[in-house]
Each structure stands twice: as C-alpha cells, then as structure tokens.
Amino acid sequence: MSPTHSPAPSHRVFRAVLLDLDGTLVDSTPAVERSWVRWCEEFGVEPERLARQHGVPARQIIGSVLPGQRFGEALARIHDLEVADTDGVVPLPGAVELLDTLAGAGVPTAVVTSCDDVLADVRIRAAGLPRPELVVTASDVAHGKPFPDPWLVGAERLGVDPADCLVVEDAVAGLQAARDAGCGGRVALLSTTPREALEPLADLVVTDVAELLGRMSAADGVVRLEG
View 1 (cartoon, rainbow, N blue to C red):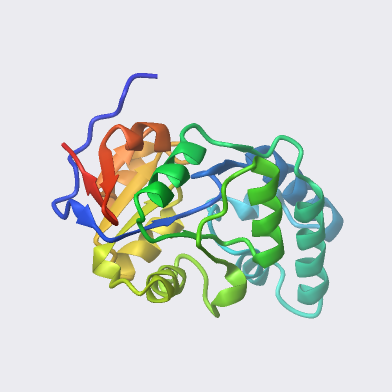
View 2 (cartoon, rainbow, N blue to C red; view 1 turned 120 degrees about the vertical axis):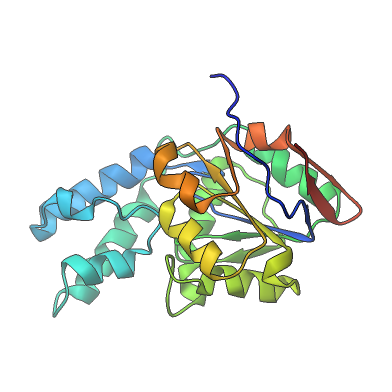
C-alpha cells in the first residue's frame, strides 16, 4: 500500500505518547467479531445495533442495546468470551518497534484502551507486545471513550499536560475523546475505519504505526513529528 499524505500537526513536539490498543497496536478484529456475534446470538440482539461502536467500552455498548436486569449477566458474558478468544490476536505492523523506540528514547508512554484490566493484559500478552510503563483501561474510569476521561487519566498519571501528548488511535470514538481532552496531537490509523470518518478529527492520517515511525523521531524524552 502506498504511503498516505496528510499535513502534520502544527504542534510537532510532544512530551508523551498515548496509544490505543485494539486496531492501533494489536489486530484483534476477528476475535472481537466472533465474540460479539456469539454474544448477540445468546442475548437476542441484532448485530446491526452494534454498528459504529468500535472503540467504545463493552459496558457502554451493552448499556445502550440491552439495559435493565440482564446488564450484569450480559457484561460478564462478553468479558468471558473475549478473554477466552485470542486466536489470531497479533501485533499490527510497527507496533513492537514503536514501543521499543519510545522506551529507548525515554518518552513517557501509555496504552489507553477500552478493554478492562484483564482483557487488556490478555491481548498485550497474546500479541507479544512489550508492556509500556502505564496501561489505562476501562476499569480506571467512570466514562470511557468517546468521553475524554481515559486520555485525561493517561496524561495525569504520566505527569504530562494533555496539550503535550500525542494520541495514536484508529477509532472515531477515541479521536473524539482525545480532541475533547485537549490532547496536542491526534494521529489516526486506517486499520479499521475509513479515512473520511477520521480526517475531521485527526491532525495526521497514516496507514499504520509502521508509517508513523517514518514520520517521527524520538530522543531525549520527546517525540517530534516531521513533515
């Protein structure tokens, strides 16, 4: 695939990097789809009702399509299904290299995901990713993406102002959250979402983190995006 061409963010120097997990560092799409299809069958929910929910925590998805007495049962079931299914969960191109590069350069880095603690750990391990210094999950916030809370918690725990953070994300919900959190730069990946949905929310659109690596440099605790 040929490189994409988008203008780089006007804010080009960042003191921390906040990374989504699924669709950004890890390809979990087949496992996610299998789990949710089975969940829909078991709970009598039309799969079409889950459209455009990528990047949103399971509890918020279930709350919107199956509120009421079965909520707790339904949430526990999708958790069990997703934790048990790691078949085909692999790192996306450039993911390992990006994490190694940021760690080697001393750049504060966090994974900020809509998975809960257990599922995030399962997928990081299944993909063989080096674990970053901080992982913020849906277990850490009252409101997940598209609310800004996850990115704000990530920035706070790294001790960096959100305006000095570069966010890398593949989902509309995550980019909306990063915008509303006041994050200084937003890089969108084309791994799961069409370009036309991402461009209004992103400063830079690239194919994957492998391409992003070619557009950035990291040294002395900061990341610079290059034109």
